[in-house]
Length: 315
Image 1: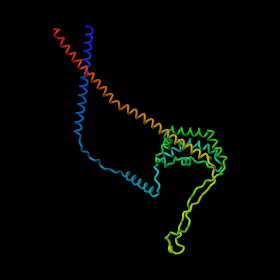
Image 2: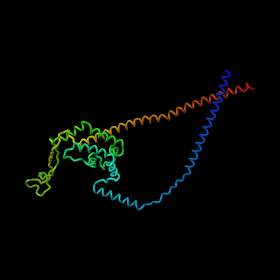
Image 3: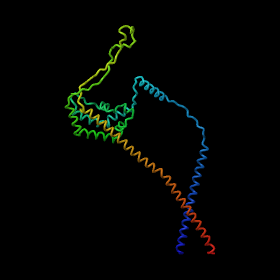
Image 4: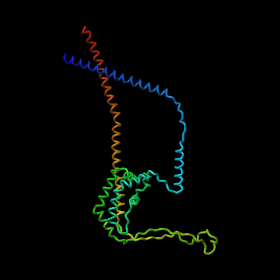
């Protein structure tokens, strides 16, 4: 029993030493923080609020640039065409000479093999225009697939690889073979309106309109149907087939991009929610530690009281 009490006394001594150290550390930190805040407050109070405005200086080159820009905007407004920034032109030129080159090669290979004699192989610039990779689109910067093709090597690699794979598939080849041997046995028609001279009995825009015949001559829009020979439904040449592939790949890319972004947003929200629980958890830990200190304080009081009771016995 005496050995147990001796061990408890030693443990009490250790706990008391640790508690003293903890109190000193907390007191020192509190003093440091208070000193820093006080100095920061004094610095803020002594900060001067007088601020002199800098002297205005306009360089000759700046006004020349401003005038040139205004003239450029004026010329664009007069022509009715929005000016295309040089950066967009450079971006499209780099795209055509870079990522688009291999893509164009896939189209050109199929066109050379399956075009009819009367068909022409589109140039690189014409194919880009046909598919929507125009300088206007680069200037707008709103089509994510165009930006991805130009700036995302992964997109460029995937679309070129997919184009090569699809163009070699039997179904795609069969479609082009069918086109090469097809004849224009169908018709496609469109309606346009042509102004022709007619008579309007309700018009009063001419002299003597009240005399017989009542009315005035007017220009009347007359529908005219234009029909041309066409291939039957389902017949698609290399240009149409390649354009369909391009549109399908870009649509699928957008769909998958939205899916992965939604998934990432969900995971981000979960992590943010988990992060928000960090402060409450730390507060609970502080409360528990505060309880521990309270218990140790009571334990210290008990130890002091027991020590005081032992003093008379020792005397």
